[in-house]
Image 1: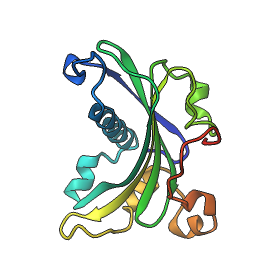
Image 2: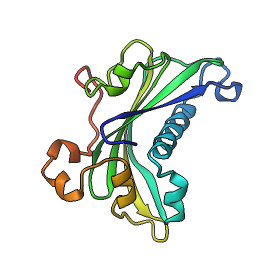
Image 3: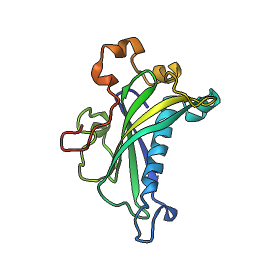
Image 4: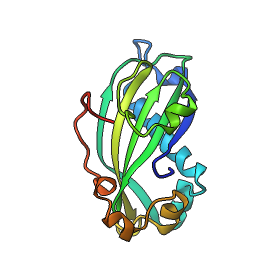
Length: 176
């Protein structure tokens, strides 16, 4: 998860992912998002496996999602992941599942990430909290992740209120 840029993971919808109605069963959307976050971490050289070895896990503390269109068996979808805010122990990530391959312009866009543009099937805002695996208590986001992701230091973040607001907001036409 690189600060203020978008990671893309391609997934082919498998038969095991669908329900009796022939569409992706609702919990699988969250599995796709998890895969997207794992891919984003691998892309910056800090895979979740490394965090776990270091005794750190990221737990979903809060999730706000919006289902827009069904996904079907055999469809290729793209999970887009964007780190948008950070505090000492938490991250806010925007994710969406789309059916059209994103363009370079889509991946670089800073505005409108959470809009329901044509081809968008699922939107999510997620607040992750770094926790110590030994005692399950919140800890600072590891410095290795902050540096690899190109994130500002904790001191720099203090002067950037928009980038430290990890609260989730309701979905509407104004989300970006």
